[in-house]
Image (cartoon, rainbow, N blue to C red):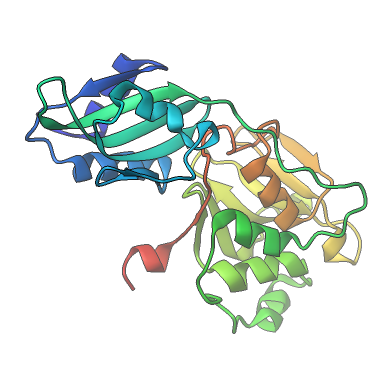
Length: 266
């Protein structure tokens, strides 16, 4: 069978929220994993060469293994909204090792609680959420020059985010601008990120302390929605809080930062 992203979408729609499918034996399971990874992000390995990760439980996709019993070769899993998606290999009823695609219901977790008044280093928390282990990507940014061009100082946590992660996107979706865009300056806004849905993530310039500027999301249809938090906190919350109006937590169970230079092999 010809395996494309459209094919995978059709197969997932056929499976529904709870099902599995043995695929043709000549299909490359690694190609299937790559296509799912391009859509859902980095997978979690549940079973590798017949050995199940002892940490696997219901919160980590164990339901994906139920249809196969002890006949699993390798299964990698993605959390997406209220569904687990898995792909890999398993032995069918005739004992033939075949590629498989499997889905199972998933309970969306509650966000990690933050105590009232807790002093949180949101950039450090963002590093933990994304599993970021690389050295700082842009530690020598000329912020004095950037701020001079813009005519204003910039929030400290935004500058730390750029220095830490460099050019790329959170969950491959929220693109982090390396220098704020001043095209909405007449509306009192500076743009610091954007999405493929054409939403713009901004600050409203209020007062002389940029660390107190609220985050504003301008949607593709020109509506503004304000949030009384700083930049890194806003990003953390959309990654982990499924109730946030711009959440990614309902779609991705693990989070990452896609650095464009790293992904291009540079």
